[in-house]
Image (cartoon, rainbow over all chains, first blue to last red; front, top):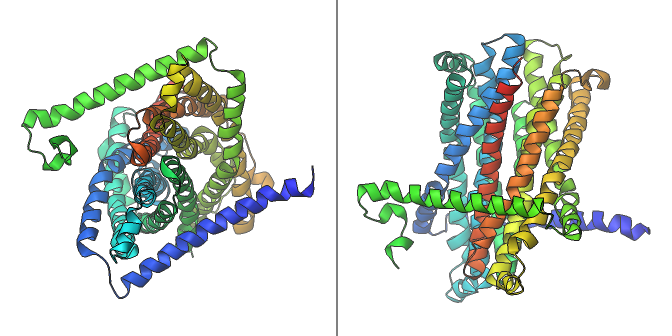
Length: 259
Length: 271
């Protein structure tokens, strides 16, 4: 094996990562330029807010129910071994609010809204609808990108709060139904655990995921080329980049909160 | 635009129809998916998956996912150990159980499930995009014309490869997360490697649960993604919609399977 065969994949991967990072950052910069001062389509923004929120709340709620249920089972292992029943509420609350809840809801949102956004924009690009907008002197950033950016950032933040609520419901139902643990005690434990900081951290994580998902999915959507195959490929790349971004931001925000 | 194209909230339907329609649609989708599962498993059991295809798909699904899994699980190990150690340091500064408990949780829960979600994201959307593109460019019809069954030819090799490779990727995930956690435990909290790297909490039940989960996710992802791809209609918009549906459905399937298998494991390994 020659040296080229060893280093070429590393270099290619690095260039790929840097291109995605730069592309998403460019989208973010353009969005900021249209936001300050605000020059974007207000009615399209309302439409996107409705669209994103309504389209994704059922899957977020269902995911959150299961996340709460899964975490109560996992915490129950420790409770069974140590006998510290008061730990159940704290364990579930901490893991769901701060860590697993935001990550799983972010991944689901990336699949539902981010992938859909890339597919939608990609289809508009390959069918030359974006060029048509430009020909009509409508700036695609102000008309297409900024409304989606605002919608995803706002809605993922709100959905995270909704998700926390549904996770508690899922945890309480599983504790009562599967583990035979009184749900009122679980809720009381949870309230006594003072998890406001963790809740806040989860919501901040969700906001940062919303920003990242919108920029990355718009970048891949606008870069789509080559018909139906190209749109499929762009969507595939978009969800992979989104998932990586979610984990990296999860670490970054978590680290910032412990400073 | 007919009534069916409008968002459900804007259609005035009789009350019963509004509740019944999603139920019927859900039942039909579940029935179709069930049939596809049976067809795929029958094709695998009868040895219809070509060996060459299985190995090609195993490379595509397994080897090509390694960097993605190493990065995401590594970051997960990093952040989990960092946050938990931070909490432990405030309550009781005793880190002797941290590593053992972390490795147990990774084996039983997080490594299989997060790896499963990553494969659902990468491979699920990839399969749907690939098969969806084949459907809208009529390549699947061409396969049928040649008397080649799309399930045997496309889904069986992917399903077999994915089932095996997801177990392998989970092992990679456990190792990656443990190494990342070990490094941050040493760098951030001064926990020696020997204290962190303890496997005495990991029992047979934990490994069995983790492997079962990974294998189940691996079998479910290609079939669900394949169904989304096979139902694609109408050019690039259709392929995009199929890819989106595949990501959501496969990810959600992983979470539901996780709940079911976690519950089962809790009841079965009751001691």
